[in-house]
Length: 223
Ligand code: RET
Image (cartoon, rainbow, N blue to C red):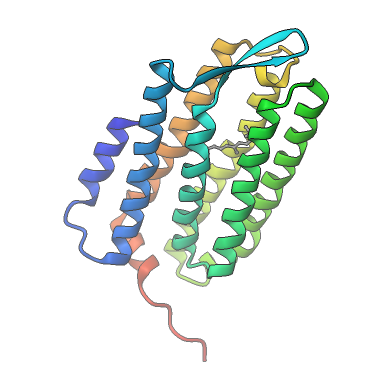
């Protein structure tokens, strides 16, 4: 995450257009927050236990502290690329904070049934959010330019595939209480997902300066 941050800082050097700078600033914050939260988890700060029945679950709560800030920032990157309006941005971020918030309730609930019920609520919010990405946001991206629409399409597909895997890892992992995926493998899976969803996403987004220039160029007023 730190290497990703340094790479994005390097790529952003010399960018003078304030609208273009927004993409770099947002993306740099995403990996900076993640690097800090991973450091917290590695040093034992971001970890606690929750008792479910007679079992003590190890909870890495710093993950959720990371996601509550980084997932809205990822969506903001996508929304700025697509040229979405304020209402669309607010709806997306609202759904996202609701998703992570209810995911936190799921994580700290003390019975398997309530944990799974809140997981269901959170997953439903994720599905509605992805529906907005496919519908409203893709439509705004198409109205920009073919290059912007194509970059948006790549990032949107990356988000759909990766984000859908988070609830799967959660429910199969220790949090789901089914005990299918041991903590070690769950941790490894979240790490790979986090790297791909943050650093991978940022590399693709910031790869082409010319596409970002097109994204921030004012679109012609409709006749
Ligand atoms: C939880 C558990 C409950 C159900 C759902 C979840 C979704 C989490 C997601 C996280 C995305 C994180 C990203 C991080 C960094 O880049 C909270 C695991 C739906 C979608 C993209």
